[in-house]
Structure formats: C-alpha cells, structure tokens
Image (cartoon, rainbow, N blue to C red; front, side):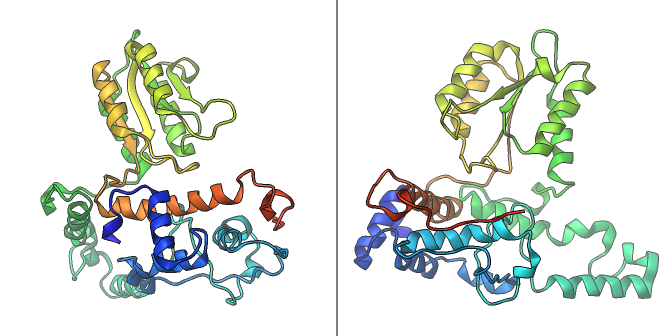
Length: 331
C-alpha cells in the first residue's frame, strides 16, 4: 500500500481496481484494502458487534455491490436503537468510535484487577501496586509518546513531553481561559456553524464569562446554499474581512458531522496575518502525505466518499438513481 502514498482516493482506488481487473466499487477492492491494512491485526483485540439486518431493510434486485457494502457500513449507525437486532448473525462495520469505541477484550480483565485491588487494599491503592491510582497516567505516557512519534515522523516525543489530562471539553475551556482575551474591539470567536455541540456550548460559556454575548461574539460559518462543506476560500475571506475583530479561531481538525478536513495550514497563516491570538484545531489527527494517518483517511474516508459519489451520481442507468434500493427505519 505504500506505493499509493501521495495519490488521492480516486487515483488509489482506480489503481487498485485496475490491478485486480474489476470495478473500483467492487467488493474485491474493499477486500484488497483490508488485506493490505497494516493495522488489521488490531481488530482481533476488540469485541465485535454483529447485527441481524433482514428485519430492517430490503435489498431489491439490481442493487450493485457498492450499495450493499455502504448499506452494511451505515446500518449499525441508523438502526442501533433497536437492540433486539443484535443477535450475532451478521458482521457489521463500526464507524461510531468517535462516540464510543468497541470494547477492548482486555478491558474487563483490567477493571477486575483494579476492583480486586480496591477490595484488598482500600485507600492504599492510590500509592501501591503495579498501577497506583494517584499516578495512573504515568503508566501510559510512554505509550502515548510512541503514538505521537509515529504520527509525526519528524518528531521524537519524549515521555516527559506528553501530558494526559481531562476530557476534550475541559481542555478546551482551559485553552480559552489562557488564549481568549477579548477586548471591546477584538472579541469574536470564529468557528463552524455545525461544530460539535459541547464545543459550541464551551465557546458560549467562555464568551459570557468575559462579559460578552454569544449573539455578537460568536462568528459562525455555514456552507454555501446547496453545499455540505465549507470552502477554504470562504473561511479565509471571512478572516480577512473580520480579522481585526476576531480574538480566536476554533475549528475541528476533521469536522465530526461531514468528515471535512480543514486546511489547517492556510487558516493558521491567515490568522497570523491578522494577529489573531490563537488558532485552535480540535480532535486533530496527523494527516500529512506519507504519514500513517493520511493513508488511513485515504483508504477509509476516501473510499466511502468515492462509493457515495458513485451511487448517487446522476446516471439514469444506475439502479439507485431510478428507485430506492433499500428502505431504512430509525427511531
């Protein structure tokens, strides 16, 4: 798969499909991508969820492989509210790890060890044993330093340079307490209109804490009519126009709802030109070409995007453009 580094999703899929002698939307392509995934062995370390789907959807004759593949991917997200469907008969692909990841097989063992330690040692568990609770983060700082080093090939993080603390929203409050210093002239925070809800609420709280009103100090960006994602040129235009009144720019690294990857370098450069005190990107994973994170985004997000475009293209001969190939129910 390294031979595809630097290619965009379409180029990668077309090259893989050409080597296999099949369509880019064929299930063979998906299977080949899985086969060459260097992290595929990690799947065995998690408990998988299976669904019985026959009660929830009806596949009509003529639906192509790509539609069925996408259906199985999104079915869990759409239908999971009905837990009676989980009967272990069909494997699903889990794409909501951003909300709650699958359970690691070792989780129960580790929890039982700590419960046993609590039962036998009580308060001494804070300072004794192989994993003293008072310094719990010390057990994984080295592991996280390795993660940082692998995501940033040009960095070699040291354990003492990695800090593990709080949750994202708490850290966001701490960041804004340090960097959001509003004045009468420069008090606005720029963020996407459909930001993750807790991020949005945190911004509102910080603005009110400093004596301003969100209606005047939250500068929300929405996509153009009929579009789903923000154009970089529109973001930069707003920063150029409103920059003298913007105190902080706050975006997701990857937008949680649309999957849009923001151009962090261009936005940061525009912020520097306008002397904006901070440009904050949340939930950022290293996505530069040649780095593992980029390849995972290319082969997962890029592949799904390609299939979606293929299915919903304006092609009268395509079954999904003439009649629904599936019916979903969600409560």
